[in-house]
Image (cartoon, rainbow, N blue to C red; front, side, top):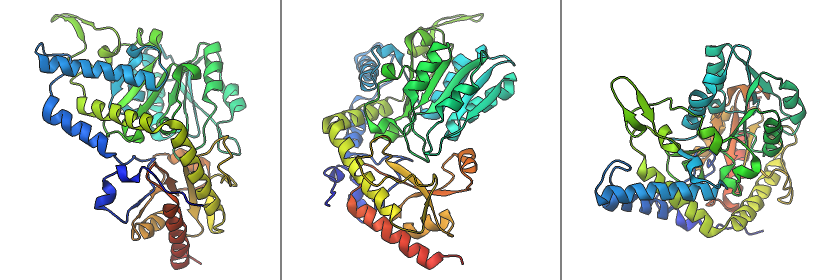
Length: 413
């Protein structure tokens, strides 16, 4: 079976590192040339501060930022561009929700529900908020397949539940969680819902209004855009109630030495200067993906993922973090993960990554900013492999050979 990427040539890094086998797209995706070119052109020829200057150059940049807001709203299925807030990424987006909306609504009787699948970005802000207010943090377990257990999550909810915040897809397990079901449950009980889309947005087909969430967050560099630029979607009647937790230039309608009145809409939550070059890069990345087309992207990555997991399952020294979770065919569409995590029998994960690196194979090893999840799975570390548009069958074959050789060399008897 030939699985050869038609898009690998779009990524200049492979002309610099010709032998690179990059299998860490869950950490960050590599950058297509057209994204880098768009950012370079903007910085050289168009750069100015947005929303502040009355001259043409600044006005053009302001128009670009607002057009980007419209483009991103379209990308995630939001009908109103004023629901889109630019942030530095997933972490800032979740902290912004915590301190611009949720904090003032918590009392010592309140509780917040997350799941065992969360990475630290969707755990620590809520943990600290609970410590500051006396509210309790409740954790829904996962089922035997590594998916959030809906029945047990619903059992944690009571009349004091203020928020449910869960990942669309775990950055360790990779399977898609039933977010639409959970958000519908939350809406029926007037519970605010937050969906961390950091690992799901690259799958395409995100529709925040169909999901029914109050907030959806993701980072630009997870979809072939630059680091330092992310998105916070806020349902329109929710954003109207939010108050900025950061204040300064760009958020003010009127200010005196005694008091201030803030702008309405997303601008009130975007203090300081916009990361315009990041926004330009993010929009170009979205355009790049749309030009390829999500059906082609999804079909290719599902086929490659099926081959990867079948190959891993046949290597008898591999232990997936969730037992028997490897799929054996790309037709298993219930949850075809583009990432998977495992341990190599009797070899530490860091040693695995180091040995693979010596063969120009880049994977992630450690706890992946998800220590409690690893503890819940009964392990300390794992090796994570994640796919991007530039990967192909030869990358998987090199990975399997590298793992087999690593185990042979480093086996601890």
